[in-house]
Length: 262
Length: 104
Image (cartoon, rainbow over all chains, first blue to last red; front, side, top):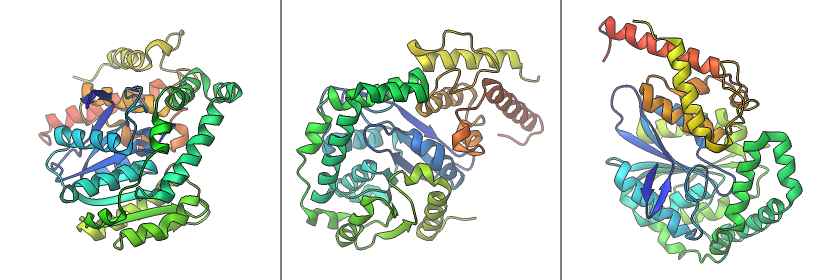
């Protein structure tokens, strides 16, 4: 556990056996029921094989990290990432990988520290725009309604056992007992002009059947360098459902961007 | 000297108890216990276990690498004994390489 900004975060690091890694990849997961596990079991080890040192974190309130009662604005998540990279990130610049809201945190970090970011891979994500926050508001409201239903927990318990039910209850508590939903619902997106600060290469991956793909056009307007790839028939859970295809897209893009060997 | 399987089982059992905390299983953890059905582990618990393995045995026993060879859906069906076997094989291989002068 690493303590940043007064909150204990669950952090894991994976390093190649040899030679020492010259690059660090930072993997950031999405909101509510997501944890670093979605990256750990999909892209973490392939990135180590490509020679990256890989840093993963459970966001505040998520996974095995501490769940404070408040402090869930986008800037709070970016502050945590910022502090973690100062203490555990190594020299940088970093390759930031974000799944869903994790990508939003990556974009916001890059706006703050453009010189510290070498590349962004955003899976089913968007920069912090008005349209994205509107979607987030709707999804958080739906999720809050779902987890407040006692029957839902019983269903999870039957399917995933006591610990699965506990995790579902944790996600419920994040929505019921913290200000996450209120803070993110009240978010005011930054001035779009600020995204011009991001000069690094960007890869955006979407599922064809996900509504997030509808935001691809706006992302390209804000970040004209963004490369977009849409995966036929896929949903918002693209990373979990199609790890091999995501891995292959990321690997070819990385080879092209940073001329990895092999 | 070859790695002692019984010691690894003891180590791994202690790590599992630490990861699972208060909601760990009441029954004893054995080589036949499955991660999901018997121990009730969620994927994030497996990650936490992997971190402890790395701290205890070094990066050579890479659970992410081991798991990468499995279908993600079968991580839950993994038995404690399979993980122990993987650790024992990895440690013995590392010791052999050191003895042969291949590492570090």
